Length: 205
Image 1 (cartoon, rainbow, N blue to C red):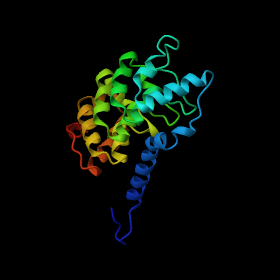
Image 2 (image 1 turned 135 degrees about the horizontal axis):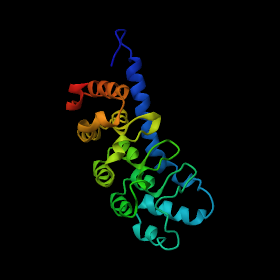
Image 3 (image 1 turned 90 degrees about the vertical axis):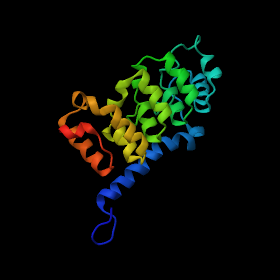
Image 4 (image 1 turned 180 degrees about the vertical axis):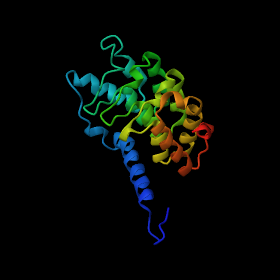
């Protein structure tokens, strides 16, 4: 949005900044993969699972099912990334589909140090197929706030992912009043207006 003086408005500048920052949250997993610091003891097997997750090598990852049966739910890195975070970041759809079959709904709600679930990363990246896979098993993921205390729908919108934002509005509209505060509803209402996304849920608030 342009100001009357012809410059970029402060709200537009903030939106651009958010978009850049959110893009970096996902992009850094690819750009800095070789510099990742692995968390805690047994770093060797965590490194191997990490690389299996980002490359989509399910055979390698699942080979640890007996020796390390909790590999799918433990943080692999000092950033708190699990195998699901990494596979979602790198858009390894087949790996994600197989992985979540071994996970509980609670496992899918693990946050990394940025405060994001793997689903938040899917919202930021705009990968609808992965988002649908995750929500099929755990519909509650849409209500878990992530980076900068934003709902996944806000993360998608701020990351300039209109198709994802529209999809999430459809998924949240009927139950929004059950899960979010009035202040959050107001914030999401303005998000709908500024993003040109209509949701019937806002007619009542």
